[in-house]
Image 1 (tube, rainbow, N blue to C red):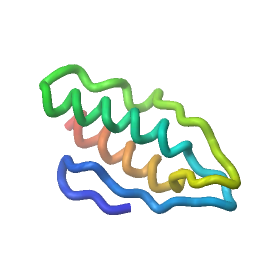
Image 2: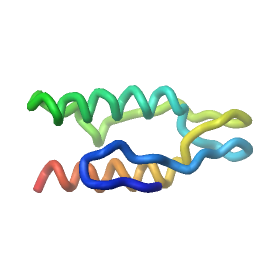
Image 3: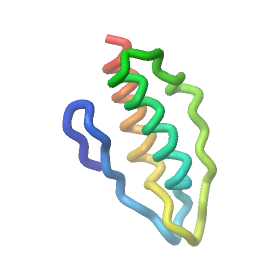
Image 4: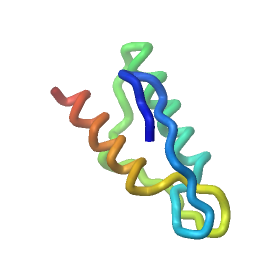
Length: 77
């Protein structure tokens, strides 16, 4: 995963092991970053749920979870 400040991160992708659906994660992060940039309430990060995928491209679950934990901590403090 790579991230700089409040910019969108990039995540490693998986194919043969379970990952999060790319579209689900991207749509959620779009809503989070749109809310941040426009001063609107940020969607609840702790309750975000993404469909698991297997045998297709998905985002590495551990990287997504770690980023969301960091983001939530950064927004809380």
